Image (tube, rainbow, N blue to C red; front, side, top):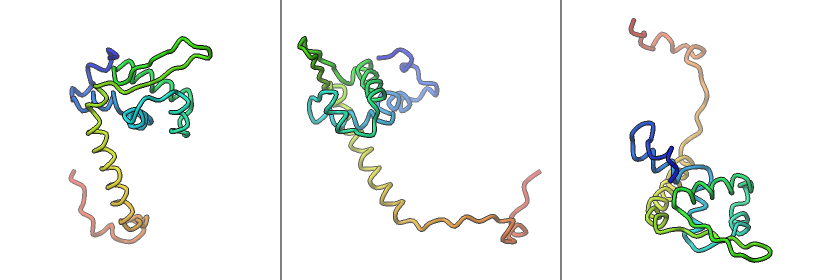
Length: 134
């Protein structure tokens, strides 16, 4: 594990967890690797919006944190496979819960009516607002 991540700034273990599995593409990478070994270009095709630079960076971080293994085969051209470790499999329920929550949140957001921007000063309701404590 990368040393800087062992001591979260807030002292909260949830922060440490999010520093390991959080990020723009890490959860997606983990979901794909939990389904089986993948080569870099397979992951790149599965996550088309991630640039190769960012994908490489996120894979390196996951490897440094012990979440995935990287197997390099001595072939020409070189073949590299990534695989989820047991540590990554231990967070599968968490990632599943995050996915479920995301689906519920999206559904919740779609049921809300659109907010109409308004300014209390323009609508004449400033008189009804309580005065700020001095």
